[in-house]
Structures are given as structure tokens and as C-alpha cells.
Image 1 (cartoon, rainbow, N blue to C red):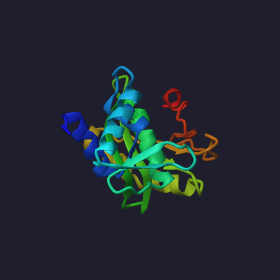
Image 2 (cartoon, rainbow, N blue to C red):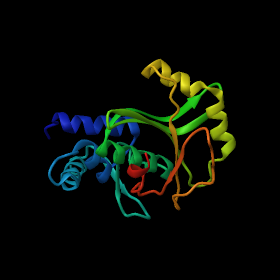
Image 3 (tube, rainbow, N blue to C red):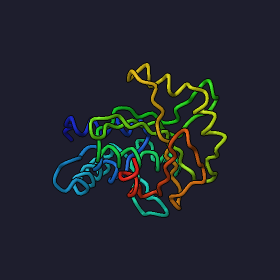
Image 4 (cartoon, rainbow, N blue to C red):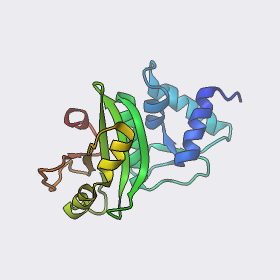
Length: 196
């Protein structure tokens, strides 16, 4: 089997993040192409059929999850990569880090994503709420530490504070704040583009 640059990039992604689905692969590696989902499905099936990667079927969605070792990721990681791939397909992603830790506040976000939208940076501190709900004490601690604002100032020249993106089944949150933005979306992320 011939490994094209695209194939190597897909395998590198699987190696780094431990898995990929056909939809994620389409959003990231076949962005802007004709029939991206079909191309991604064919490529992943070819890699699977040739023994390069393994696959398992998600018991709820019935979607195939491809990996090097055959392990299935937890839903938490699956939703983070789903969000990343969704944003990657729509915008230029400038930064992506899973489980971003903040030393001063002693907190971490499930993901930190920065995109470029209409010529401006849009930062997002992501919380995936499956088994627990993100609370205001956490968001306040991160904001009040000033660490995030310094992080942005060092990299982008301004003390910017990103929005908190709360992802849960109902797409709602009860974290009011006048000092920072809190946006809720469900696992489809359909409303997110209008809100950021």
C-alpha cells in the first residue's frame, strides 16, 4: 500500500490523538473536497483492510472509530475531537490543546482552541459536561487568576480573555457572568457558529 502525504497525515493524527472517525477525518483531511465523507470512509477502510489501523464500532452511534491499537476512546475525548474537527472544517484553527492546565488557578480546561474568524482571533476554553456540570467557581478562578489573559498577551499582544464553551446534551448553562462570555452548545455544535 502506498502512503501518500495525506495518508501519513491521517496516521500521524491517529498516533497523536489515539483515534479518528470518518466524520472527523472528512472535516480535517478532506476539507473543501468533493464528497469528503465518502473519501474519508474509503481511505480509513483501505487502511483498516490492509491491517494498518484497527476499528471498533461505537455502541450508541454505530460509527466506526479507527485507532492503532483497537482501543475505544472515552466519550469525553471523542466529543473534544468532534468539536475540533467541526471548527477545523469551518475556520482556520490557530491553536488546539487538549486538557490545557492553568498553574495559577490550579484548574484545567478540557480543551483550548483558537480560531481565526473574520480576521480576528476567537479563543475558546472548552468544557465537555457529560458526567458533571462545569460550575461558576471554576470559571471564576480561571478568569480571576489573570493567567489566561497573560498567555494571550504574550502570544497575540493583547490581554484577551476567551469565551468558555460549555458542551452538554441540552446546550444550556447556568453560569452567568458580566466579566467573561459563557456560551453553551449541544453535541451537534450547530448553534456555535452563530454564537462565537
